[in-house]
Length: 247
Image 1 (cartoon, rainbow, N blue to C red):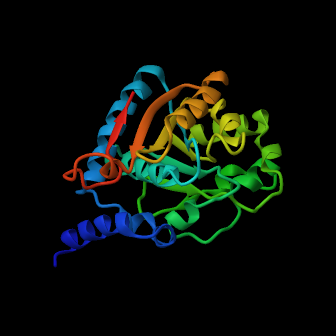
Image 2: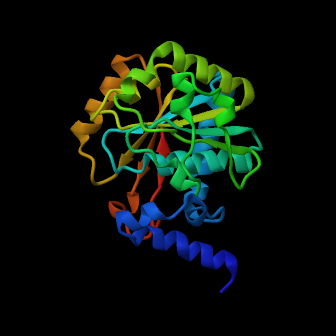
């Protein structure tokens, strides 16, 4: 079997794995630039990049209404897409201080990261980690802190994001779901917009409406919707998880 076919098979197999097994696979195992998933993320970024250029937006937050909707995977795939195909300096920040996962996504050992920067124990640039792609860097969550909401004070977050935007063309943040805790809404107000991930056929409409209303009440711009798991609710010939992106 050729390497390309093997990677395609691995991508399909990911969809069938139990949640625990999926979590153990890194993003390099999942990502295949020839797969339908990669195609859809390139299309998504093409739409996003238009507004980035027209409105000078460079910092975006990924969230969802509830846990388990695929926001961290979506953030990782978008980061790979931007870095791989647009040749721009991109950084993905794990701002989910309750259930961090980006270090596992990129097969990195936990070490100092965003928490230390917000606590004033490290400069944010010193927490940047390399990935297998030259134009993509990662900042992991850092050490566990009790009551992470306290860390997300607007002034310090704004300072950190401003420094990242000085060094990088695009800054992506993966954070908590909207409904269980207030972290996402707090962070979103300091970014240029939100990409909202929805698990098709699972997340109830009123749950999505409640979460998006919370963001809108905070004057947050929801720039796009990423629909995950569409293969479970669309006809059988849609055989991939991340299907669509729309305004």
